[in-house]
Length: 153
Image 1 (cartoon, rainbow, N blue to C red):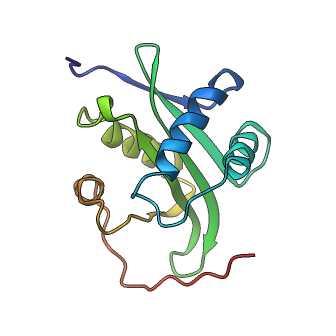
Image 2: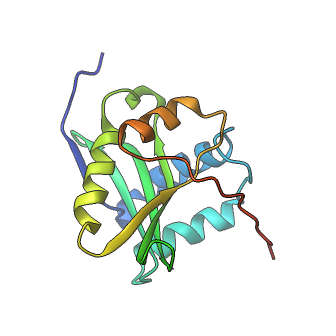
């Protein structure tokens, strides 16, 4: 049984590639996402997180030396919000690490990291992912009444 441990949140490193890819594959094969992603896209995401690309950052949640999950954030500009918008693209916890406050720790980390530069934090959730939605609400997130529209290439 896991007891409350200290979450160390750090940027993805080269040594994390395999573990992050496996978690990404689990996440994108789950009902938590509408659109599945190919292995090539997931690997390109990891490469982007490891590069000096200014629009994306990747993080892992380290629990006493074991990777418990990962997250990716991207950056955009929002006139409506009045500036920089931080999109929480992915947040995934291995099943055995869920319910221990890691998600809450991550949201606190992101708020501290961007509180002086970002106007808004934003994320998406599949409506059926009620457990995640409850965590987001407890962390102060609220639902936007927008319909999102996309055009994929």
